Image (tube, rainbow, N blue to C red):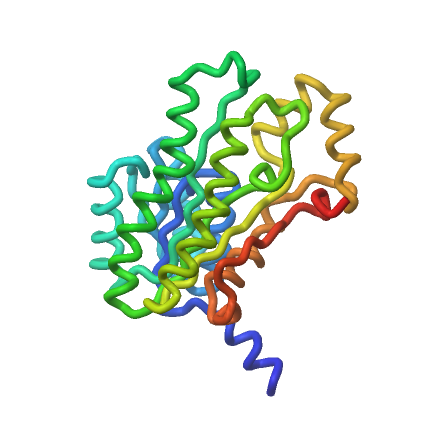
Length: 261
């Protein structure tokens, strides 16, 4: 009987979730996990060629999923997404701020345009999405915001040549903690997930370009492998659900113990 109650606390029936950067990869995997837990989904991505097939696939699996092309740095786009979600599903209960970009260059050679683009998407996108979703959540009296940070916000990336990306992910962690304190009295919980190295198109390209360095990175992970899409499913459902009702301002590191040594 007690176990049934515990499992019920992970249920997301009756809740609506907005997931940004959801057209493919980890964003799509997290959206799928939330949908499987019962949430109605709004998938947001700037690339329509990824987004529609992603939503079609989820709907084919019996999940409720809207697809909305939007730029997370645009206030007008984000307002439209939040309003349409609230109108369609009766509220906005979960926001996963996953959209992000990076470029690679030694910091001394980093172009200002690249700096500004990474900061604007990785931090500016969370600013826009969180503030507009929070207005709806404040009206409802509750909500859960999950920001996708990175272990790059906790440690430096040797050989990464992406210090600007690391800076934004450190900012995501600081913003998560600050908003958790600011919005706690309004019923909004704000947490972050900090993934380590995962199997993605980016790490696949690294494997092709520099297989020795790729093997070295894998060797630094005590669990002996990179993360896979399924490894974020439980984390995002936990932080979105009543199972984490007393958890806010937390950064959940999912990295196979990479940062533990």
